[in-house]
Image (cartoon, rainbow, N blue to C red; front, side, top):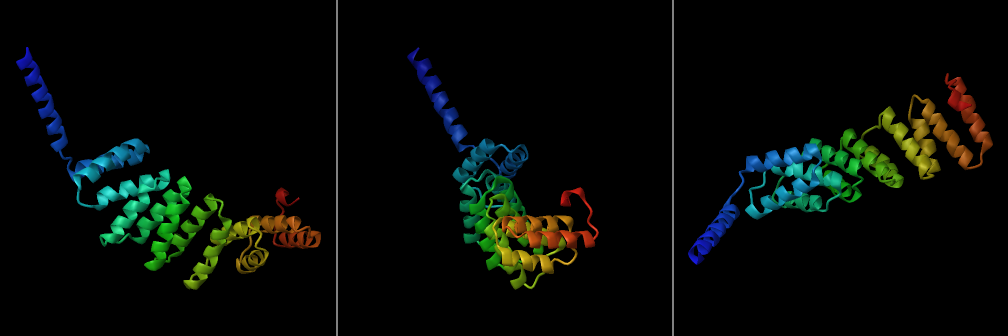
Length: 232
């Protein structure tokens, strides 16, 4: 019986060593990570990530893409580590990928990682209006309306012009963080005004206890053809 027990123990040890020596192909890890991403399964992502690190699997887009997307939304600090490792290894993130990661940050209100991506985009001069718009959305989701307003000057410095939707969002954020000079500038430069633009300005005038300004804006809105019940 002692021999049988020893054989069983040896077999158990052999199986354990076999499991430890088993390596998952890169394609298998990528499939698992994408499946975890679709299911928003953070636990599975972390387990696969652990295997990925232990195996020292060569870095590949199919691996780090789902890892970063999942960790960005989950506000997991591992996102910053992976992103820095990729830069150290010479990988270049495209503008589209940065935009996707920023969008995931906005969903998870991950300001720390969003700021890292923003700095990366600035260094690489990835300065499209789409990137700026997504940056602004992240800041707003994190209630950092001051940072959202700062994006406006960055847009102008890049030689770009906000579109009507971006002007409307900036106007709202400027009102929320009480930047009155910026509010007026945005209102003047926004071109075609929307009802929401007038409502935000009227709200600011009310907050400043300026009934004359509120009345003037009300009359201007009427002249622009807005007769929505919201104005009244």
